[in-house]
Image (cartoon, rainbow, N blue to C red; front, side, top):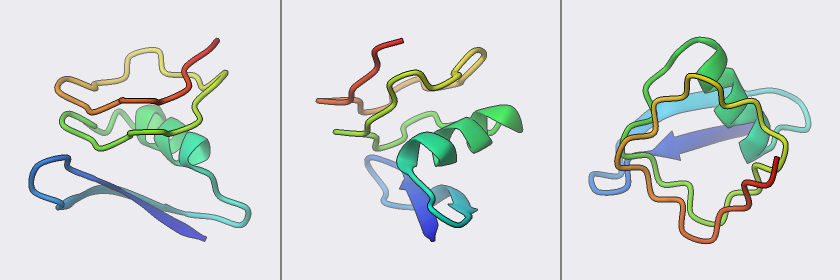
Length: 70
């Protein structure tokens, strides 16, 4: 299943990930693993508990209601 991460203001796709049983967490981790910039990403309500986000570029990202417990 393909999941797109879009810019919070423009709606432009800034990263896509397509894999079986995909989740937003897997998509964000895939972006971080290749050092993709997620600056300005719309991640409101994303369930990212336990995601490996070391080195993630999330400047200006919208994370309202996102679950980020480690």
